Length: 130
Figure 1 (spheres, rainbow, N blue to C red):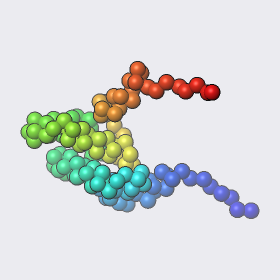
Figure 2 (cartoon, rainbow, N blue to C red):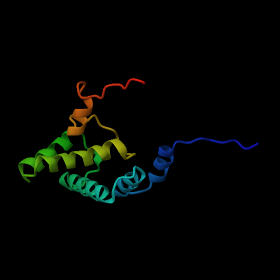
Figure 3 (tube, rainbow, N blue to C red):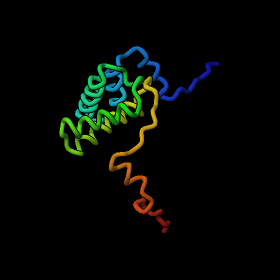
């Protein structure tokens, strides 16, 4: 009798990504999560700018201070809008939280959506059955 092994899809995704370059991994995860093509391109561009800002160091070698330095650079030197800075922050959050082989870091702070989701008074009230 045949034995069936159940493997979560994310495990298979991690195994397949072991030999791919970082930006290819970002694209693969974005497609796996059904993000729009434009979001994928934007995230790749922000991640590429982040890597180039830190003299081509791999993101696994960089910590939360590197993220803070990059976002500060965008605001102070590049004079980007707050929404642009949030977009870069969300791209880096995607990199560190969704892409395998990059060690997960403790990143403090959140985008506006994260703030609203964590607010107790904003949470939806449970519905009553009729």
